[in-house]
Length: 341
Image 1: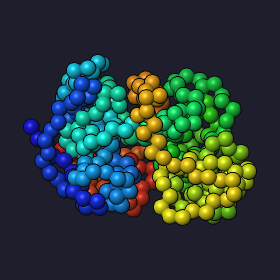
Image 2 (image 1 turned 60 degrees about the vertical axis):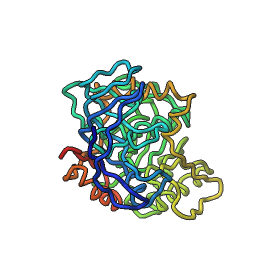
Image 3 (image 1 turned 180 degrees about the vertical axis):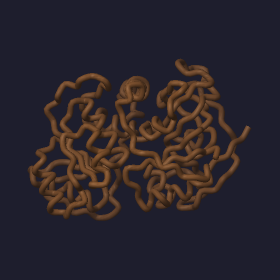
């Protein structure tokens, strides 16, 4: 049996449609008929800039949803015909786990079963960033876990999430607010209505002049934790000034520096592939909780709001254009593709 996939043959090469062999799931895995793909900015950066070292030919993509068509011998809780949303994360390596194809394998631990009438596109717009958020805030920073639908105990800490319009930023605001943290975030006036509903105690306009943005962010502090979900040279500079004003600290970034950066004294920039932390043995319980407890509850209670969807036409053949759209930049949108279109 074979299926259609969008393949990158070499670093920075365009995607090409190819028939590839359909794998069978391992003992702890599921085989999924992939019905919707959600794209991540990292997909475009790997494809266009070879940002991370990977083996070629490669199938990219990490977030997808569809129907279970094969169940590994050791898997419990999933059956053929179940609707699921899944993610390639926690150190999973191999093309069979990637999203840019019509059939994909996932670890049962990183799949979440959905009600039969659930909207796949809502869940898939949230799941791609979930591992990053859980790993950064719980595995790395050891913050309290959220409990959707319950009144959180106030934690007495203030957290700055720069970029509340981004998909990971918007999820972070909700996740931390549900855990009882005081969250300050930023957005543009165009998206203020969306971001204001996510739970932050204050939303600051980051389209203002540099000095004004820094001044307002400093006035809203001081911050126990600062996270830059955009992580380019301009936002790094802003975060550096904000932390310098309170005596220094760490900027937690979501992508590496693409060139030399000069930070104020006492300020450091911390980046790693945060989701990989969930693949470590000491975080096995957190991984299980993230996809097996928290996410199903949040979906059932509709306590998480995804950024709006923007469907890119053309099925798998439209993925190359979608990557170009991501490189140009999107704001408050999650690009999705129907691989069977």
